[in-house]
Length: 165
Image (cartoon, rainbow, N blue to C red):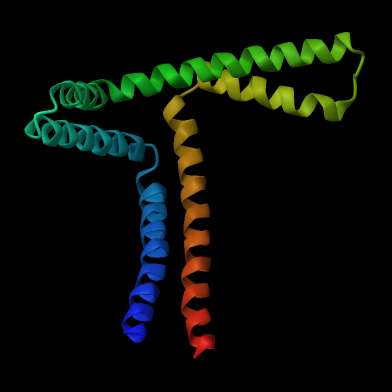
């Protein structure tokens, strides 16, 4: 019995890094299209949840899930664009206010300006620049990090099990 439990545990310890590795590869290959794929999957999950809830005769939550699923599928990209625009404006305003505050407080040292200048630049990129190019870069970088971490976790799990024996 214990041997079977150990094999299941070992298999479970391998599944998570493999899923992370595949996710990282997809992020590197598809980039910002992963957002659309993720939105579509989330929308479908809401639709399925709504249908199941309706079948169980729980009408209000079922209808809410259906509406959320339809909105995510139909308007997901628009909602992301609006969210990015709002985040860009917030970063721009906070960065400018921080720079002004540094001058007012007479803390005019170069290192104090690094964070606010980066916020202003990212804000400008998000508001004026090509959103998908910027997001594509971030998603691909995150995918590379995920691949590295998953590979480490996978190798650690495999070699740790061999060392235990």
